[in-house]
Image 1 (spheres, rainbow, N blue to C red):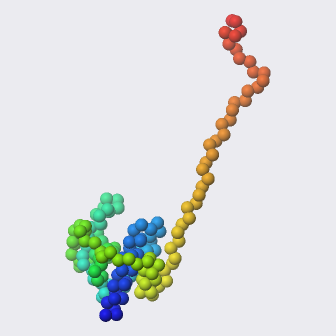
Image 2: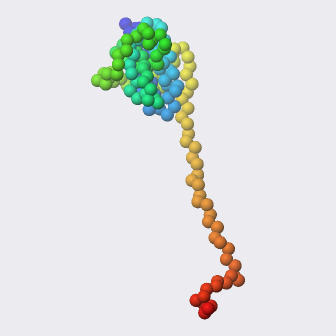
Image 3: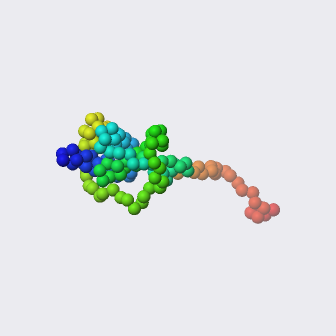
Length: 160
């Protein structure tokens, strides 16, 4: 029973990290933590690859696929390897009706659980400070120099 509850905690931690990665400005570290954890679960036999799904919004209008991985009650997507295309069935488009169970876990706790699980320390996520740039001042308009001795010729004023 101990291992089942631990697997569930790991699945919830992956779910939490994945949910935060979708909206994080620097999501590379979070996705790497998720993928390493899923790979280790697959190696240990605690998760299984179900099949391939088409990606909803492919980049550069190219059709792409992801691997659907089942871990307990949760389903996750990871990047496929070459042998996945040969060994896994293609399930077509993703089922929009299915949702993972709604679980709540602190992101810090989730990262700690997953880094302990994969036996690696993850680098802290650096939140980049936006560099404030002073607004550009409009260029000074140079007024044309007017000398005091300047005369204007006009037929109206000269009477010509």
